Amino acid sequence: MSTFDLFNHTDDHKALRELTHDLAKGVIEPQVKEFDEKETLNEALLRRMGSEYNLFGITIPAEAGGHGLDATASVIVHEELSYSDAAFTLSYLAHEVLFVNNLYHAAQQPLRDKYIPPVLDGTAIAGMAMSEPGAGTDVLGMTTTAEKKGDKYILNGVKQWITNGNVGRYFLVYARTEKGNRQALSSFLVESTWKGFSVGKKEIKMGIRQSPTCQLIFEDVEVPAENLIGAEHGALTHMMRNLEIERLTLAAMSIGIARR
Image 1 (tube, one colour):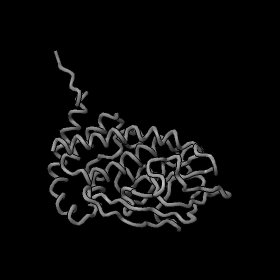
Image 2 (cartoon, one colour):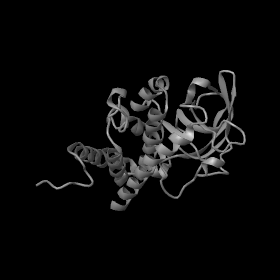
Image 3 (cartoon, helix red, strand yellow):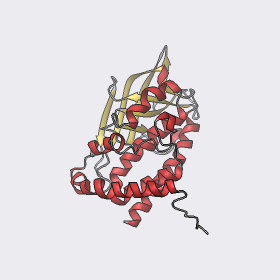
Image 4 (cartoon, helix red, strand yellow):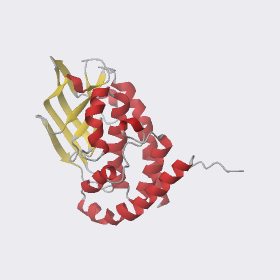
């Protein structure tokens, strides 16, 4: 009689764990010391996670270019990568879970078609901007605003502690779209090259130093209306849905660190 393996539910999970473990030991671990001391993300290696190792899109369907796997698979990847380099893995998580998984499951098809391919193949590094200096994880207290004007939203505000902030090309940004309504939050696909977007302070940290943590500043950034993700005022639902898997993968990172 076969014994159920809590940590590798299927043969696919087991194979994924072995593949990721070997990748972490052979490719990621050798660069840890150099980039930790430089306090700089190994951007080239993060891009190779898509272009060479096909490790992005774990939880999005195969027809969209992903692997069509489950949350357990994502947990396995984050645990095994963190065993070798938790800092690199945090930047991987911001790209893979906070952006790729979130965008695919929340966005309309035209946005998927435009932005999913370059983040899956590593052409573009991405992240998510939610926390703020005066609100932190109290997302209902955020003050960043997006005001609808014609066929654009005008985005103003500051986001704090954003992983991949100084290396990202695309960001999923949360903002308030109705004054006085704490529930009226919307999310937008914002490109870092747009006028009014800038990177503020990069944090000096005690640990996880390879992964950049930065402030993002939005000053009258014009966001095309078609870059609204999902419905206006509807971001709270898909924000919380995505944070469910993000918390799981963060916990998996902790397990990897503890095993090490």
